[in-house]
Length: 229
Image: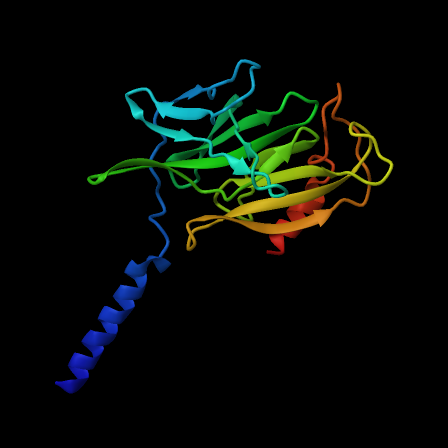
């Protein structure tokens, strides 16, 4: 009798740990519904004062607005990512889909900053919500990013990003070394985590009137590092 009681308590403890959030979500996610994009509010100079939105047409009150980000240097300047919203539907290997969402900040100069998000729609008896699975990830106008399908390393889309390293004496739109990052979805943590980061061994051109092409020539090294994680 005592042993039976002890086993029952142990089972309840294990169940409690799983309920506490350590178990992955169901492998099948909802299909992201049809959506629309809308730029943020602009001031009289055409600069953003609020973030761009991704909304469900049937539920105009159900939106994801790109959050602002405070300047880490001053702490008093907030970047509002309200310009040029873009999206891409991301089919999932086990059904359903997410959405890759981006929007840009500009202060009127030559430099811009784009914020990235990976959104999941969640609908159940308690209601509906749109959740961003990606921590803060930004990209300058001298950068390149993409969502890759790499089934040998992850059944979820992988975010890869290359952003320039501005060395001494270099001009803005010149040749630069680049920092490469890869972000993978962690089912247990239920959000994306950085898999690795490295600096390229060679410089790449681009960024003014020519496109930046860093990820393709670095693909073999990126895949090698993904497979080692």
